[in-house]
Length: 374
Length: 254
Figure 1 (cartoon, rainbow over the protein chains, first blue to last red):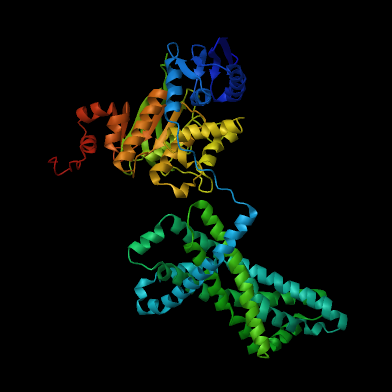
Figure 2 (tube, one colour; figure 1 turned 90 degrees about the horizontal axis):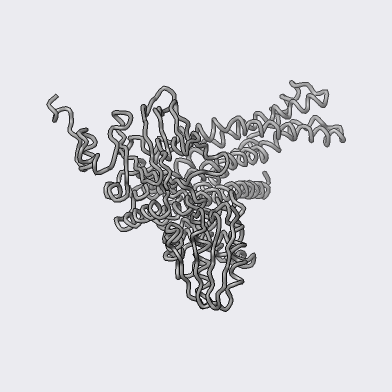
């Protein structure tokens, strides 16, 4: 049966007769039928809605007819629903008319690009203050943790080292191996032009031990464990677990952040060191594959190149990189407010900030060592 | 003329995971247009049974027929019923209006002003007309549940499932929610299945009920809630309806 709304005019009285099913599947046809019928109502003083021919009605159809009556009344005419033949339809229409909000709904907030830029600029000082406040809180937490060891969840540390260190070894190891291979290839191709491929082992050691080893390892850990830690704490925050900790007298920084930072500071140097060894292997494979240097000669040259300075200069910065990852990831997690979307946003920010932070800190160390003439 | 056939027929359902059976011999009918409640203590498997009814999990054996056309699989095609989850389960990145509009714009060709009108009407129906532009994080728990009901109703289903609709609400909000359920059932003729253990709600809204017990691993009583309360001689059921401790084995002199 087709949906239609017939309009009969008798002077200043109009009779609207909706016919057919008024339900969700027919909502679009009904909307155009209602719009057409409405044009015939100009100048009426009374409008009657006859529901006898409505064969099927649901909430959608009732809303459409209820809004029709509202619109008609708003322009002046009196409306009347003839409900004798279809009490269900009349009841539904009355329900949606009664429940109508008089107060206008709050319009969804849409911001312009300039508005958004302004609000970001406005929030920057607060974000900076909060970040510094968090670092201060962490600094205070360390002596407090030493003074009251039971306020820290030390039992979670071995598990965290397992998750961050052992479980992450395959991916950090593979990344370092490949970077060693790349330095080897580049060394052979560039130094080979001057006939000094004999310096490739030293290049691999210096480049990887000092700079790339700590950096590559930290970036992989930031992407992997940083995201994991941030989303875990963010989920705890939105599900009120952090509030529960506070209510039970635990300081979330001491209980959650300290063990995670400790685990990172312990695990990342080990990952870096293993990564360094694998990078040497990568360099060896590249050099012996591309040149006639023997593996033994490569190892001898490498052993000569590994000095205390080369080794320590790299390893000394890894705890700082690890600490930066831990603080940024946990800080972002604790700053989460809202629901699932906020967890995702904070996790993304944590990964981006920790990778950026790792690169900045690494550069600061390099600059400092260069100034020291090391 | 109302359809005399039951809306939902559950036959000899056996549910659990692997070898662990949570419930067995679960058989019941839900009449069209009625308010049906699934009762039981905490951990009795009420919410789990609901997951099977709405097709989120597959039973070990037995059948669930909705409208006589087999077990629903909610995620293939247009949903045939609406579900209110315990927390409302609104999408936190969307405003209430966007949450409600989603099923309409996904499953129907309705667009534009009509979507806005329908969304606003449903929000008005649950008393949230002024909150269309709010995010779920900005409204209270009770309001989230009401918004969840409005979203469940967007596709005009003739069957709604509610998981603990009044849990955690103050008595006034819980009463308002019960009135809304009665409106949906009486005025819109919707069949409503409610998982709950809120006694005042049960007596106010329910036409019939089943009582689940984890020890018995299934249904221990069924019928009109008042009759079950007055006539059941099972200690657990009696204790459930009178809010007392069930008699222990020692009390019974065994």
